Image 1 (tube, helix red, strand yellow):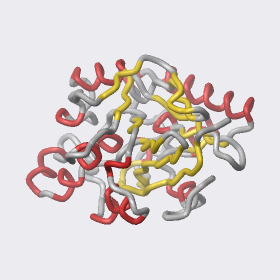
Image 2 (cartoon, one colour):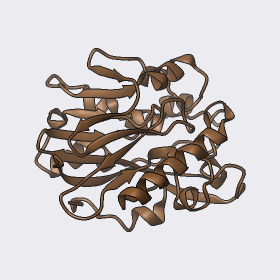
Image 3 (tube, helix red, strand yellow):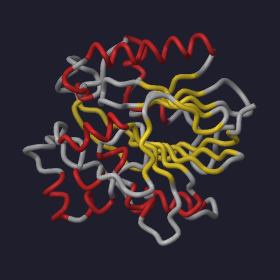
Length: 265
């Protein structure tokens, strides 16, 4: 029996960029608006936060923004992130604080998925267990990918470094999907009602990645074959288990989901 009870998709920011960053070697020059999402899962064993969005201060403090989103490195600049899109504001609307997070599961350590740890962990009652894959942490600390920001990927005392697939709670399971990054993970969620959900993470930015088996634009060490293999793996699991496979940066798809404070159950 699953321990998962509710799932909230959380819009933490939006980013306008060239579509080819999501679809490898396709549609260069076409601009898209992409949601940057986190997810909150309430279970009988605690609360799981899936990804944490960006660091608000790096986007909205001019000196930091000019450093971290230097146009020479980040051609399309910083995402747009409003104060009310920060995780503590979402939690406050549910009568919670960040101290109510038990696990922060990071699909990978790019800036738009790990940056919000500053809001999750920087409080005196922090007891969150941060889950990250060993391969992902090693790759992030290697300095080989500009989308990893140095001070967001230094392991802290409450980080739990994992190696491979595992169960976080009954009905909530990490799935290895490397390709976009070295240690990228997706997440299987069984809720009380309806079909299981697979959060693809950046294994599939858009529904198009899933339908056409197109690798993300950014692939670890240019290994697009590994990224496509992970997409096919997720599609096979979804077909075998009659699960819904959710892309991660698809604005049209996001609009079909329950809008906060509504939730999936």
